[in-house]
Each structure stands twice: as structure tokens, then as C-alpha cells.
Image 1 (cartoon, rainbow, N blue to C red):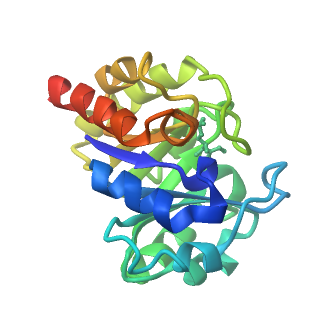
Image 2 (cartoon, helix red, strand yellow):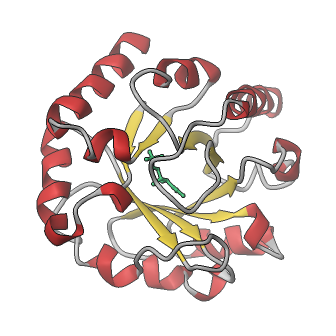
Length: 219
Ligand SMILES: O=C(CO)[C@@H](O)[C@H](O)COP(=O)(O)O
């Protein structure tokens, strides 16, 4: 199990400190939400902000591109710290080519699906991806309410992974908190993205620890 706090909910005026704080508390990855105002109705930040964190933390980057034309920008997000680059199935005309493009840059490719997209849309890309990201809110904003159908998707993906002997990891993103995280873990999720429930907590390190304690009891 890994915790990937989303810096979308961090305080950008002190991003380096916020990231260091979650790293010291034991978080595993930094989730980097990139939004273009086209694929999603919000603009967040780009590669320059992400790269400003290189070396300020040892945590790997888990990049989530919520953008049109991701192929055009993938190269900008490749750094020595970039572990995953995830693109949306809905944003890619040639998803297989995009996944191969990410892999050719020595980064693990991920594919995300929106709440309205069925798992079946991923059928022919599961064997090429290292990560499948289930959106459990409509992408674009932090602090939204969890959409429960994401649980069925995780169960379905876990079943397909077993059936075909594949080894992609299952990640969930949106509306995750201490109350629902056990349910998504039981459904098969292995990487938990959490934005507001981590960065908006009164005691951020304690909140990270609470997630880690739940992980430990589930493993
Ligand atoms: O990709 C997104 C939103 O589009 C997420 O990564 C959110 O930033 C998660 O925030 P919370 O729902 O956990 O507050």
C-alpha cells in the first residue's frame, strides 16, 4: 500500500515545506495533478512547479495529466524522480501509442478513467500499463465527494488482473478519507491519492500516520 498525497490541496506559497512535511511523516509518492482548463474545467500548474520540487524531496513523482494532447507534454514531466505518468483514456486518440511513448522515456505508464468511463474501455491497454487510476470524483477539483461506483471498478480491475495474470497497480483518486479508505483497499486498490484529507488536516503528519496505520492493519 502506498499513500500519494495530492499537492493540489497544498499551500503553494510554501510548497517545498508542505512536501517535506508529508515526506517526513512517511508518505510514499507525490501526486502531481496537471490540469489544462480544456480536458477539465480548471487550470492547476505545469512541469515548472513539479520540477521545483526535484531534490527538495526524495519522494517519486506520480504525475496525473488531466490534459488534452498529452503526447505533446509528456517529455516535460520526465525527470529522475518521475515514477509514473498517467494519461486519461478519454484524452488519448491512440492510447497504446501514448503508453508506449511514456515507457520509451523510462517512466512507468498509467491510464486513468473518469467516473463515467467503464473498465471495459481499458481492456486492450491493461497489459501495457503499469498503473490504472480510477477517478472517484469528476476530475478538476479537490475536496469533492467520493463516487461509490469506483469500488466496483476496483473489484473488476482486480478480477481482470488475476484472470489475465497481469501486474498493473490499481490507484484511486478523489474524495478519499479515513472513513472510506478501508473499503477501497478491500476492493483491491494499492495506491491511495488523498488531497484535502491530508493537506487540509489540522495536524498533517498525524493524518499521514493515520492513513499508514490503516494500511498496516490491512496488510
Ligand atoms: O485529480 C484530482 C482532482 O481532479 C485529485 O487528485 C484531487 O486533487 C484529490 O483531492 P481530494 O478529493 O482528495 O481532495
